[in-house]
Amino acid sequence: MHIFVENTLLHMRKLLFWLFLFSIGSLKAQTYGNEWIKNNQKYFKIKIGRAGIYRIDYTSLIPAATDMKLDLSTVNPKKWQMFYKGKEIPIYVAGESDNIFNNYDFIEFYAQLNDAELDKELYGNPNFQANDRYSVITDTAAYYLTFLPSSSTQVPRHMKNYSNS
Image 1 (spheres, rainbow, N blue to C red):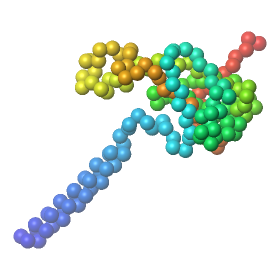
Image 2: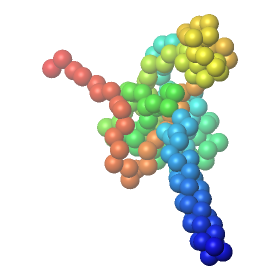
Image 3: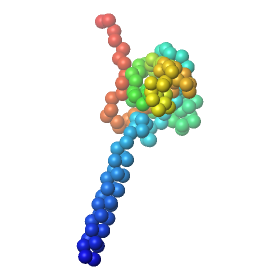
Image 4: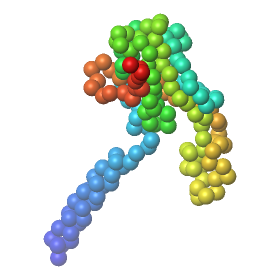
C-alpha cells in the first residue's frame, strides 16, 4: 500500500509539472496589440489632430532624429514605414530613387482622427459605448514613422508615382 501511494504521488507531481509547463507555453501565445513594434528600430511619433493628407519633409525630422542620435542621410527612403493602430499604412516617399533621404525628399500619408475603436475595451459590454466615432480619451491620433534595417528583405507599403505616358 505504501509503494502504491508513493507511485501515485510521483505520477501526480509529474502531471502537475507538465500542466504547469503547458500553461506557461499558452501564456506566450497571447497577443497584446504591440507585436508590430520591433525593438531594434527607431520610431518617430507623429500626433495628428485633424484628418487630411500630411507631408513630412527631411528638415522637420532633423530635431527628433538628432535626439535619437540618427543621421537621416543614412536612411534608405525605400525602407520608410508608417503605422497607425498597429497596422502599416501606405505612404508616398518622394525622392526614394537615389536611396538617400535628403533635403529634397518628403513623405506623404493620409491621416484620420482617433476614433473610439480602442475604447470598446473600456466597457464590460461594448453595446454600452455611447459613440463609436469619438474617443472619450482624445481625438488626437498617434502615427509612428520608422524605417527597416538596410538588410531587411521586407517591402514597405509605398504608393507609386504614375504618369500618363
